[in-house]
Image 1 (cartoon, rainbow, N blue to C red):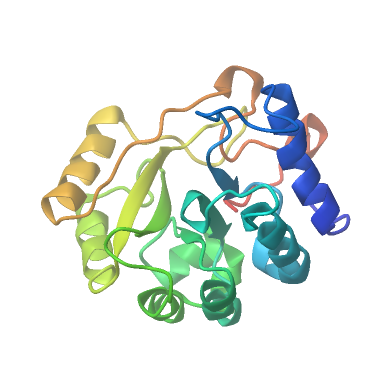
Image 2 (image 1 turned 135 degrees about the vertical axis):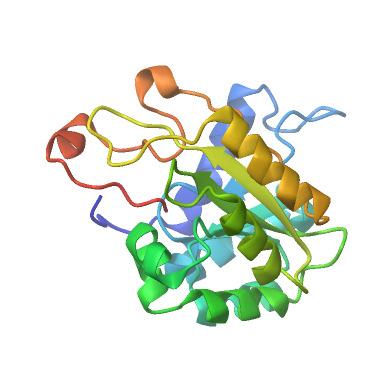
Length: 236
């Protein structure tokens, strides 16, 4: 979908407050609060709206504000390499990367920003991310596409690429819609892929799909009118 406008810091913080209100945690949370973690994902590229995202997260993390620890906040990016170090130095939040491929030619198709910031540059920025350590690993999001990026060779190449990075991998079953250009990998293929990663020391949970029945699952947040145009959805 085309960019309409950037959210303001107030609108971003407002979403957290609305969620807390819905959970009966406003104006103050209970001892074991339900809203415990935040992921900046699914509303566009956070690092292209860094000033407002940064301002919002500082309010959310402030001990005199909403007081959610940076260790419980994850920022997801498609890979805006020049901003990654700044995010780590200034905010220190957890980092998630929408990777989805181990070759530049394929990632150029799935995540077009790769044409500007290819895999090698992206992974070098991750390798140097200031906030990453063994207890706070970078999460690599990897959608499983049948016959596209799901072979054992792909898994072994992913292991090679992640060498030297404190990392874990989220394997995401693809959520198709009518006319989608891809299919989801089989359960056996996904678990074989995960086994290679796990055996190499990388935690690789398989995400449980939710919202498929109403086309609201991961990667499906497009309107019916956009789908009918036959436009390929981008993965981030």
